[in-house]
Every structure is written in C-alpha cells, then in structure tokens.
Length: 134
Image 1 (tube, rainbow, N blue to C red):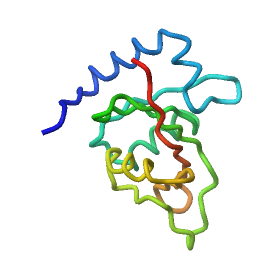
Image 2 (tube, rainbow, N blue to C red):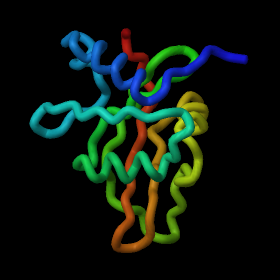
Image 3 (cartoon, rainbow, N blue to C red):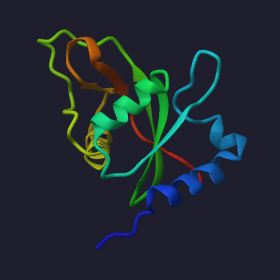
Image 4 (cartoon, helix red, strand yellow):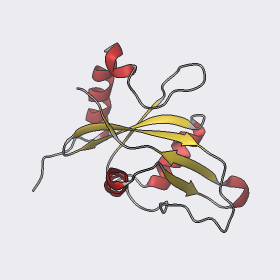
C-alpha cells in the first residue's frame, strides 16, 4: 500500500505552515484581480462537484490544495462561462479529486469542470497541478 495521506485538519495545518513563506505564496497558480491567492484544502476523496461549489462561493478563483503520494499540489481553479447545454464538460462532477489529478497529469490544456443545471450551474477551468514546497 502507498504512503498514508493526512486528514483534512492535518493537511490544512501543513498548508498553513508552507504559506508562511512568501516564495510559496507567490508561486501559487491563480490570483484574484487584486492579487489575493485564495486557498481551498481538499482530500483525494472529495467530489469535484463539491469543490467547484466551494470555489464558486469563494468568488470563482482558488488554489485548490491536495495531497498526493508525491506531495502536496496546488491546482488553479478559475470560473468560466457555463458552456451551452450541448457542450459536454471534460470532467464529470462526481469524480473524485484523486481521479482529477490523474486526468490533469495527462492533460495538455486546462480541463473544463461544470456542476449544476441551468440557472444554478457553475463552471471552472482547472490547470495542471503544481508542486507546493513544504
């Protein structure tokens, strides 16, 4: 079996310690228009749809932190217009964040993630994971 991953509380503490260093904060993949780099901590078992909703509630931009067996990574999530109903998203909302990491590792472009229907839908683009120095 692989390395043991931390629970959300322990991972959050580790991320907070890493963010004390400006070199780590300043290299996170996405920032708001005023330079803020929001953080959301997720687990490999979290559903992508739940994470999209969390990012949307936080303003549509977030650095989503996740621990993999290789270490902690940050994935940039950024809101985008909800695609037309006939445009299928690249990723289904029910996959886990762990599964998303596998897809992002092989993707050559950001992936489109959409959750919800019609008026309450939210859509994001997720960038390639970036290692976070701990």
